[in-house]
Image 1 (cartoon, helix red, strand yellow):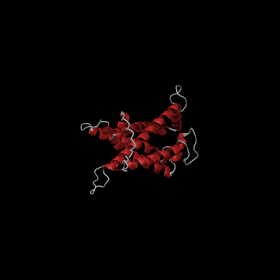
Image 2: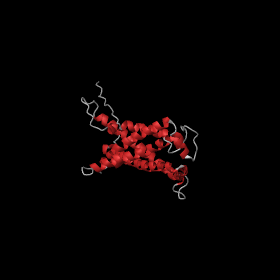
Image 3: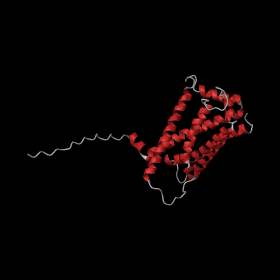
Image 4: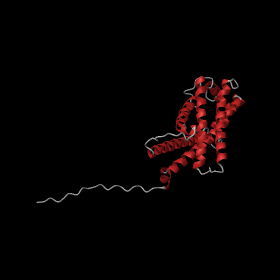
Length: 243
């Protein structure tokens, strides 16, 4: 007696989730570049405000310490102490995470698009472009050190004094390694800002042939001003202008 042929049972695959506007935007290369551009501009705005605050060190300990105190009470009496500061920190952390994740995923996507190396290598990109990835890693490590040094005091070279940011800054830049780490990181920051500002303008559709010169000048000027402003503080401590 012949046996009836058995039919293999195949498990039904669940239907793929319907694409949403948010998912579609994030999964696209343009979406990731847009997230990277917007998050970069948020961090850039913070850097402009940060360097302006740092330059108050040239007006003496009273004004610089008062500025440090104001950061903790800004928004009062509407907001409680440090609420506004923590809101800024949360926005910055979100911007950093979004920037890093989009940069990593774009990098992986680019590698998958061309799995084999080019036979002839041409250096078409600028030095800033070629070092954007490593520059981002350097800046990420620097931020960790900077927070441990001047925010928590964990890695501070001297006796960290809460509420006395002027003396803490002087202590840090009175050491050779504090100066070297900070200055090298600020040079990497300048290159990152120079290329990043230009790339963000292109991604957001601001750049065109007529505005190319203005955007390049703005990117170079912004990178130079930020780098010079940040580097001026350790140089002032090293030369005795700030002590």
